[in-house]
Image (tube, rainbow, N blue to C red; front, side):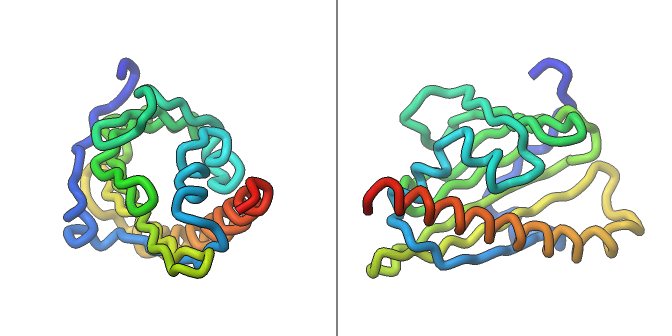
Length: 170
């Protein structure tokens, strides 16, 4: 992790510990396995999550708790992530161990998949973060923008995952 600022790794309880939590939810016409196929595909992230330019898994398959990856984003921001939850078909979550920008101190994403039993799943995405130095005056502006952007991206995820499921012949 050279050229990175250390971040403070967090656990799943971070969602209850910070005000900066964004939640998006979609009903997706795909199986839990197909949804995780999309999650595990490095290229798919660059399609639905517009800030992401490249994903590099730095741990071999099978992925699980302790898996690491580097995500290269717009603006030269690269995040070094470690997965802290991984139940294929049900849940995955990761935290930042480091970042190429100094701003993020704590960062967590948590994806929860519920099989609705009719060829669809409820997928809930939580993103939680705190910046180094604590809250600033701009947080009040950033929160609504982040919420809107995340919901927009997750609709793109739904569309991408459904196209993947359709082409893989459910």
